[in-house]
Length: 458
Image: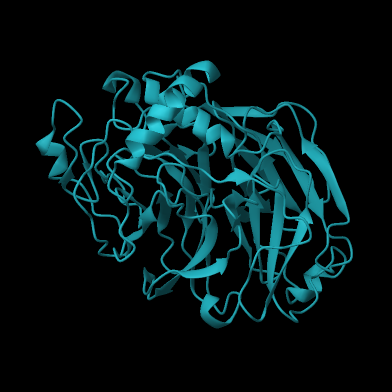
């Protein structure tokens, strides 16, 4: 594969140089993104910033906020979960086994690999504990090992749920535990054939009765044939007790993070859209997820914009396609979402959604590579995205790439998983109150125990 990539790479660069570049004046965020003409190039532009360490530097946060590394030397951290006692769980792993179909698939794989950490995925969950409430990790230890590319996490009524790339498993949890032995109990199998998109995002319903799992497509736009897309590009609703599942929403190409909002208990997702239509098609998006809705993939994008590459066409499905609520920009690769309300991080970050953007590989000018905040009002997006965590790109290199984001409501801080520097970052208002320790956490919460139903937003 490497030999082929090196033989074809000069041709790729030459062809990509002839392509139409992106228009910096094009507004591709919000509820009405500008969509340019399609540009289905033989070889699309492919460029990724290569990893480089942070050294003595840190990511950039707005004035009035601090950022610190609370965990390092991880093994591809993807998503995080805050347990009721304040411990943080980190899912670490890397999956997928899709064979390459075309020469440009080989090249794309080589390009993507250049932008990744050389560390192998841990196939584990790590626990982080702050014993004295000072915002620094005092204990970093393996909590569960022997998993298979874990990604989505949820915690309901004393049970931890883990979405591996091929199944959903549960573990009984005792408060304060620092490890759990065994392989867990399988709740249900998850679609794992080919696994072009292997990540299995997950969240729990507000009442804890259902689990929702995002299952990405097995191709960019159906090039492997639609027979391998059964139960793909969908969100499953799973009964937590029985493991029975149904398709909750479909045509949603790669739902990489899920969360229920705190206003209407509405399910939302961030979604990675299709490639190879140009550097500014198609915008990735944040959307509410309606029961039974169809979001277009692969036949159309952003509502009823037809993708001519998929044959036979399905005008009947295109007519049903739902327009997403909020565009995030093309190829930003959003991989994390979580909500805050009632003041949140304060200032401009008081009511809305945090979104982790992993960053592009398929355009000449990088997009994403940051964490943004989407303001909400009345339970709906309201305004342009605001940069919260930046500085990941420097001199053509990526010092990190954000993945999952988790807002810790009890402590008023945000955690960001970074799978290139293998770090978990903590963002807090400067001068924020001391974080509660395990011993005084109940007192801080006004004498009440934390809620028994919590989940990641992935």
